[in-house]
Length: 424
Figure (cartoon, rainbow, N blue to C red):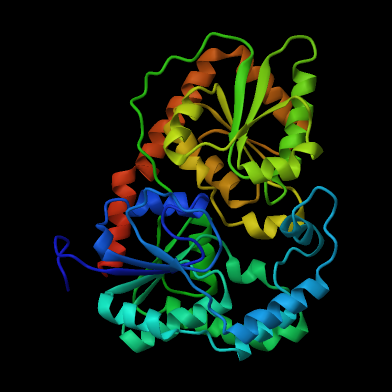
């Protein structure tokens, strides 16, 4: 067994790489930033923008052979239903089915082998990884990771961010055989003697119950400020949301904007500011209230200044049961960033999902699930400056205990080295 000071090499095979311009890329940037570039070799499967200044090299790969990719593209274009006006294809599909993949795709993953090209084989052989880190996210990616692990005799460490297997695929009799096969395969990986990672306490309980295995809580992390920032005295207060509008979050934010109109009827108490990716604003803005002030998403390094200029921070999740399948176990990557700003956090959405249970369980922030409850909360916070200060400080203190960057990075390193020790 290597000591902590000795170098070890990590092969990352993921949907998105370190420094990708998305929540997963940001989370990985924070977790892996202390690693030397020559200790990381990474491949990813989804199209994305990557930070130009990233020290980590990455390469996009196609898992399926060319004929399978063309077949998939053709069938999907024939079956795709016209998206609802103003909605992205993915949100339209989620609204209708609660699943991204149809039965024929699951069978395609089962029948068609995952492709390990010669140049990729040679690169991995020369790199000689000590461990494979993966978030999986698809059956075809799972097959590839297992193939590489068997060829190079390299252990697999899985970092589960949500119930990708239970939510990505339709539950029907046609896909029962491949679903059974892949669940058995996934369970074998999770019981390989390694300690794996999950992105929320609720996910940890779920994975232990369904698959077995050992897990540590490893999620996005942040640098925490010294408490003592004095809230602004100006009015109206800035209510800020940062992040994506997908998973029907745009609808819930639209409802929040409607509630704010009621709160501001006599006196302007709040301004609502939404910082979102440009593509999301173009897709959803016309479906949202005109009292929302939109800002193009800022770089990760600039998020902290945006949050600290806010008075109250907002997080939302959809009430749609089909969408809840994707959020019931997860914890949004923005929560550590919110808490690190020492500003009060309000959550609006179903209280049964992972992020709500986490905030309520740790007694940080305010969780609401009705328009009346949210309106009362906003009015009370506006009138009670001392409570805003106290909520922000409590959240920052708890967040530092759970999401401090040094602590999370140490836990990740311990697990990848095979020590399997959580420092939390």
